[in-house]
Figure 1 (cartoon, one colour):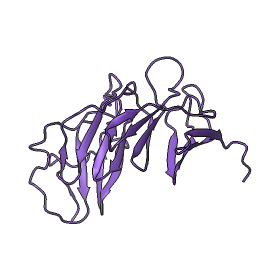
Figure 2 (cartoon, one colour):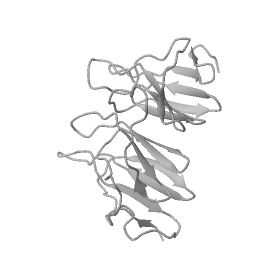
Figure 3 (cartoon, helix red, strand yellow):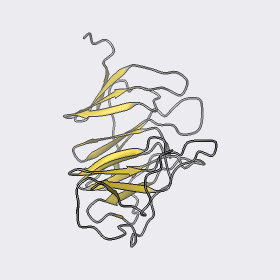
Figure 4 (cartoon, one colour):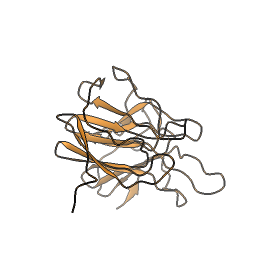
Length: 219
């Protein structure tokens, strides 16, 4: 039977859409989000919904070294049975922290910052997995009229933020956009730049690290 396994608390019916990721098999994880109403705030609880019965500890978070982060507008990416949680907003500030949840042990791993220069704290960004690299694009930094224009690459095997050079013209400021990986390319459909809603499409070749606009492509 269906069962929520974290903190023995059912999912709140007034919760705004949280980030949900398929973890393994028919198991899904829901993390964070925002409550609805006058006192809306980021929700601290993390939930896991197990569609099929499985052997788990009575309280899978009991012996974990970290608690579930209280954030929204973050990203959660599954790689090698671990969920990589980056960024997000807690109602007061943006975060730049990388948190890792082990889906086999149902436990948050102790935080070890990746080598290299980490991105500024942000929310509303995207995190796209291509092979063993995570591409963090755009987001809202909480300053200035426009969204972020930058991209950051995290090597999940080396646990390191990479230095790189690209060619071509990147999308520009973007947050609440989409960035979908297909083979070795990422397709960014801009949601907005902080002032206007946009509908332009851009392609990143992750092998050549080359951007190109697809707005002139006719269908």
